[in-house]
Length: 580
Image (cartoon, rainbow, N blue to C red; front, side, top):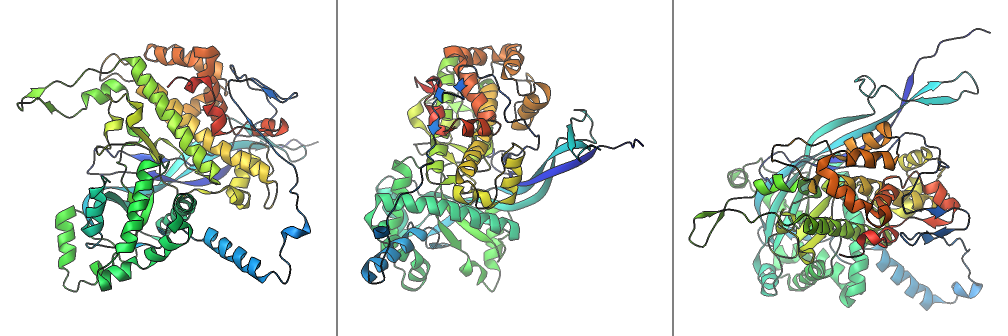
C-alpha cells in the first residue's frame, strides 16, 4: 500500500451581514453591526452539555420549573368534505377570496404610502451612513483516505493565515437622516401629544434596495396584522386605500385629510401598544426634488445638511423616531459613560457636577429589564411568524417613552417604566414557513446535524430558525452583562474584550463550550464579581438561561427528540426575571 500525504483544505460558509458603520456627525450613533450569526463547526448533537439548574429529562419529557419548553404538537390536521366549497357555493367562494386578498395585502397602508418632501415632512439633519459587511466563518478539515470522510481540524488560534472568521466591507450604501412631519398632519399629531420626528433611510444601489424591499415586506406584514387587529378601518382596507392615494392627493388637491387621520392612528398604536420593532410609516417620493432644473435645490441640500444630494435611483423609507441609542452604545462600563455625560448647569447657569452613579443593584435590575424586553419583543416577532436572522447589539434600540429618546440609555437611568426596547434592521428577516427554502439556512442547519430540505419538516425548520435568533441574542446578552455592569476602578481601565466575536471565540476555541469553565474565567476578574454573583443566584439560573440561548442551535436535535422547543416565552418564565 502506498501512503500519500494529505494537506489541510478548507471549506467556507458565507453569509452576508449588515454593518451599520456610522462615520460622522452623531455621537449617539456609534458603529453598528448586525450579525447574521453562523457557524461551520460540526457538533455531535447528541453530546450532553451540563445545564446549571436547567436539566431536561430527555426520556420522561419532564423539565425543571426553572425554564419552560413548548411541547410540540404533531397531530395531523382534521377536516371533512363540508369544509370545502362546492361548485354552487359562489357567495362563500367570493367571500373567502375577499378575505384572502385582504390578508395578503398590507392593511396598514405603509408599503404604498408615499410622502411629499416639504408638504408632508422635512429633513432636519444628517445622522450617518451604513454599509454591508460580509462575514465568512471558516471550517478546516483534512480529507481521509478511508470512505472519503472529512476530519475536522482546529487550526492554531493565532495563525493569521488560517482565520476562523473574516470580514469584507462594502462601503457606505445607506444614509440615515432625521426629519419631522410638517403641515396639518404635524399639527394634529402635536395636538394629541405625539412625537412628530421621523427617521429616514436612503438606500442606494441594487444590494441596498433589495435589502430595503425585504425589510419593507417583513415589517409591513407584521404591521398589517397588528393594524387589522386594532382598527376596523384598517381591517376593511380603508387605510391601504387612502395611503395609496396620498402622494397624488397631496400634490394635486393639497388635501390628505383621510390618510392623515389613519397615519395619526398608526402613530398612536406605535406609541401606546409597545410595538417591539421600529415601525414603517411609508416611503418618501423625491420626484419634486429631481424636477428642479436650475440646480438650486441641490446646492441648498448641501448647504443645509453638509452631504451630497441624493441619487435619483435611491429608495427612501420613513420610520417612526425612536432615537439612535443602540445596545452597543449602552454596553460600556457605567463609569466610562458617566464621565462622558454632557456638562450640566445649575439654576443660575453655573457648571454643576453630574449626579453620582446609581447603586449597582439598581443598574443590574435595569439591565435585566432590557434583557426581558428584548426577549418579549423577539417573542412577539416569532409569534407573528417571522425570525429576525440578524440580531446583534446594534439592531436593538434603547428608547424611552418620553421625548428625550437618549434618556433610557443614560448611565443614570434605572426606571424600567421609562424604557422601551425596539428591534430594528429587518433586511434579513423572513417568514418561518419559508426558511426551509433558503439554501444558506439548509447549510447552516446541516452543521448541527439537521437535514432540512425544501418542503420538508416544518417543525425542524421552525426550531432551528428560532434557535438562530436565540443564539445571537444570547451572546448579545453576555456582552451586555460583562460590559455595562463591569465595576472598573478608573475610567481608563482596559478590560477584556466583550464583543460577540470575542465571546464566541472564548466559548468555542478556548473553553470548548463549557459554561462552568467560562464562569471560572469571569470569576477570576474582579470587575465581574458582582455579575458572577448575580448569575449564580437561584442555583445558577442566570448561567443556565445564557447557556440555553448561546447553545440553542446545538440543542435543537436533542429538543426535537424530547418533543420540546426552546422559545423566548420559555426563557422568560425563568426565575432570573422573576422580580423586576
